[in-house]
Image (cartoon, rainbow, N blue to C red; front, side, top):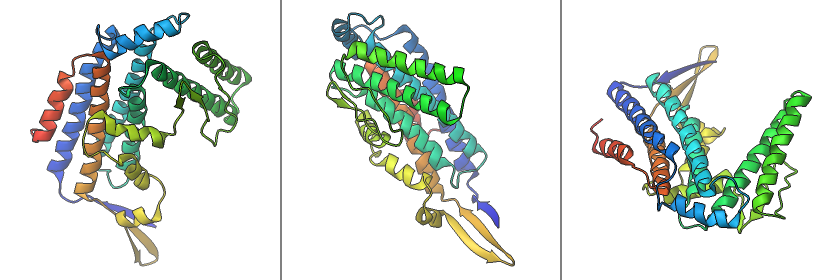
Length: 296
């Protein structure tokens, strides 16, 4: 079997979108430095901090700020994937690879959107934060066991999970925190919040204020997952002599749509984080204006 890729003659398009991805990453990095100082006075995060300090007097750090910084960490991870997407564009490797990378961006952005969702009660935001942390600790513990890590490593993973469980129970005494089957989503409901799947988290992306993103996660998943129908849309299979040749078609409009959507996801999540902390989003907005006007 032999494979080849036909990218066409769209060098200017590749260069433009490489520049767009680099520019949105720089806009994020320039914006990100503000979060170290914490939320501005009167911001949604600071108001949540006040309410949650009254609900958890034993908490030693502001909870609204903590939830916001967890979201910022997810956004920064999405930004790293944007850099990976740029590498694919620069190397003209866009036939199949942009879909799973863009999907990873959507997943991290979806988690941030879930943590930052406007209008939810401060207690609900705190519940979301600690359910997510405990779920991550459970998964890490299972991974260490599956990899047959050393006893010390497995013990450390278990201790981490239990420490996070105790932090959750400090805030929500009596909450159900058990999760016995890694193949199933945990059935936790705390402060009226049920821990959602990534697919359900992704539905909140539409609340970030950027148009034309509805269903983006489902579309990315359709092409990122093994699927003979979507592959048939992207691949030509021909018998050549004694072998089969696969030629991967590159539709410029299609891969540009994926890259554009991924960059907008990073922008939208970063802008939402700025809103929660009441920080300056000017660098992000300038990027958006340049991208929409086609100046790049």
